[in-house]
Length: 545
Image (cartoon, rainbow, N blue to C red; front, side, top):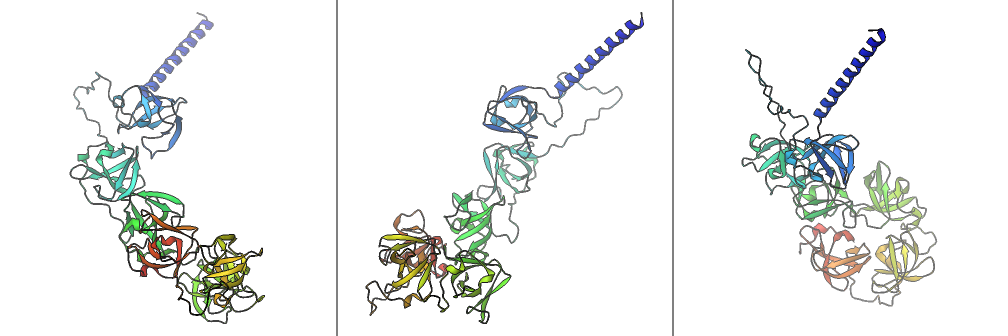
């Protein structure tokens, strides 16, 4: 045999060995991950995750009708290991796929001990004793098997809801009740609570868990409340005019952070950290609402010019100058209502949230309107003309002194008006707008540079001995406000009053969520106090409904 023949022989042998090795490797790979069924995505978009639970990261997404290779299921009988068309392997919730075999027929894969082939029997060598393999500890976990389940603070439906777990969420099992009805669990974020066993697929029998019936209690000193209505909106501010940021449901537990001045709204924090404002009447608290810190200043008139203090500590003085005595001081960031200014605009008159009025240096404020637009209220004179500035968003100028008169034009916040006169009780003022239009405006919605009482009476009413005018203690601050027959939006509206309408407060509901009022014509009803400005403390009113 020549050298060429020998070389060719060894080349053939080498190729044969390579082919054999490739065949063995391929067979082993196929055995390592064998397709046992076919599946199709049955939802619009389905996340494929790195492990059998929603707490695992998403590795890819597949879409409706996409084919899947099925390799097996998790020990929870809920998640399935699949292969996508582009070769990615991961886990999907079996609820959202359709397979050509029952889920119960799939083998358990993913870290479980392999089952020896049928008929294979392990026989130890003669003369030796078989040592059983070490038993692998099965983790006590559960997977939510329904759309959503409430996690409660104790083992029963009478306990408040702490959070919600959704289908496919994995929880650690910590314990159980004696009757195996409820499981104490721990969420991925460390939150602990109780779930009804019927809503869980578990890796271990309920009876194997320790018995513990102790409810979960909030940390000592934490002010909490429980939602006492079907569904409650949390808003970005203390009023229904603010946008909804979240919704909570009956039985939810919330942390109490603070309140508005009138204690009608509460600032709360949910289990996920979301914060918002809730009507106080729909929260049952474990802490006196009046003891919570005030986190919203109801004394600032809605729509009125305001300013924020920009220095560390600002003195409020009895007059427009540093030579006047300080009556109080306010810290950085305090919001003040602007009432007027001196002639050169270096000092402004303000009102604090407690109702204290005084003067501050304008250099230490950031104002919502130019200081020059404020009326001169220190007795000094500029032009000698009686003027006023509109202090609400939009103000109707009417053909007569009352809301029953038609609107002839509208002026906006900051507009300067010339004062012509007033009605007998000074509640309405006759004005001239910058374009020469004359009409009447509500005196509460302007800031004048002279006392209104100094203006002449020009409405034809007498100033002799008229009937004593009513001293109203509240004014509407929204465009239109329903007056209802009872203290809730469930009661019908008996009338609607417009912005600027004055009224008297005569009572309140037990939760101060609504106030009873008397309108100028004598009609009585109930309104939401978030849409009025009042000079009195609502909590001092008698409970009348």
